[in-house]
Amino acid sequence: MNAYGKTSAPAASAPAIELVGIDKRFGAVHANKAVHLTVERGSIHGIVGENGAGKSTLMSIVYGFYEADAGEIRVGGRPMAIRSSADAIRAGIGMVHQHFMLVEPLSVLDNVMLGAEGGALLEKGEAQARRELARLEREYNLVVDPDAIVGELSVGLQQRVEILKALYRGADILILDEPTAVLTPAEASALFSLLRALKEQGKTVILITHKLNEIMAVTDRVSVMRRGEMVATLPTAETSPPALAELMVGRRVLLRVEKKEHVPGDVALAVEGLSVVDERNCLRVADVSFAVRAGEIVGIAGVAGNGQSELLEAIAGMRRPTLGRIALDGRALDPAEHGPRTLRRLGLLHVPEDRLRTGLVPAFEAFESAALGFADDPAYGKGALFDRQAMVADLAAKMEAYDVRPRDPRLRTSKFSGGNQQKIVLAREIERDPRVLLVGQPTRGVDIGAIEFIHRRLVALRDAGVAILLVSVELEEIMSLSDRILVMCGGRITGERRPHETDERDLGLLMAGVTERAA
Image 1 (tube, rainbow, N blue to C red):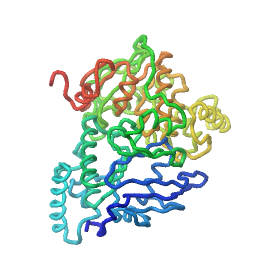
Image 2 (cartoon, rainbow, N blue to C red; image 1 turned 90 degrees about the vertical axis):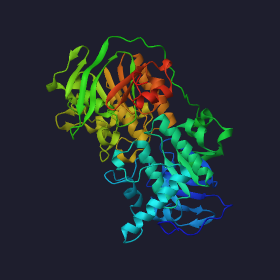
Image 3 (tube, rainbow, N blue to C red; image 1 turned 120 degrees about the vertical axis):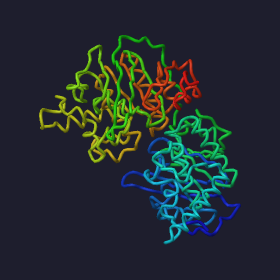
Image 4 (cartoon, rainbow, N blue to C red; image 1 turned 45 degrees about the horizontal axis):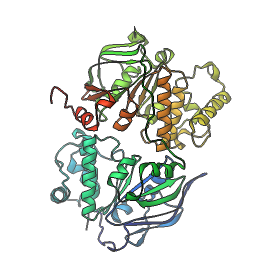
């Protein structure tokens, strides 16, 4: 019996999960259309699809966040009524979210026990939890100090804590949502080893990811969703990334970035000796210097949380540098004019890393979000008298050009999928003829078709003479798009590379702080 009272084992011969005719609507949006899915016990099953294809909704139904309008869920061959995450946990289903559900000031042990304390006598429950964590460590090589403070752990170790939480509650079926989004290559490799170990122990893993190379590397079978429907389920060994991409999008997709040799111009953006401290007076960017020329893409690689965000915000005028100098086209920026509005007028535009926190207002209608930062555009009217029809028409044209779905400028921003929200932000910034473009995580949470489109737009801008500073945790993206690569670790630049002179292992070492000097 686990901490949630799960007692009965499923039939060994039955599939781990069967979804029969699952249907779900959100108003006019038909998110899942009579979906059938079978996940075999003791397998790693991948689910892929475009943004808005319905895969997250489907897994949210399995984990009890939503209830299906129609259809049936069978776990181990038995019909189950899953109306909450507690129901899912009792059924032996665990989920590791892309954004971890951890309480950072608490210890690993405290986080694992939350909601499963073992009764009023916490001391007894804690002893039992320690014994169970020790067992899980032995079985799966899930080594984490139970007394470590979660907020002080690396992202990879925090993910282990999430997996430990699920296993501690007795999960036989583990759902992982975009699990490698913020991991180094070494951490991703360690995760895949763990998933294989879980499979060997009879656990079932459902992997939601946009990365087709991960699907090919670790899954046994893969299911493809498109526009709410399940269009294919096939053995991974019998398919390929191009074939999966075509099934996802409904057309052939170019998986590699095609770009000609760049011809850089003059320095458009220069950063010299830049240092930035955060709200707690901790040094986040330490003496960083680099330049970006017109007609080139400079990529910054690194694990999330190593100063890239603060660097972009400082250059964009959202955060005041502590030390250093920033220059546009050879002209040093005066601190008094170093604000987002002035920088936009000087031709420096910014696609922020977190579209919901700093790029959009979810409660606004889409045409209002698409005008953020450009409310003084004469095309939108004068002063407080906005020409709403002009704003709606402007976004309608951009939606057509950027294939934003649905094409409804008056729809609330929060109602669009993440990929379509990202396209709205990109269209807003790119279509303003930037001289310098700062781009943070351009394809985070974006499907394969949208990735292809975004990459083409960035290369076209570079070929038109725009200087682009690109921050991404996706090494493949950095290596494909960049003309030069800078690597950050601990707020510092640990190395510079040309894409054709490096590989993921080399960049991974620099991301971990292993510089040439240290080596």
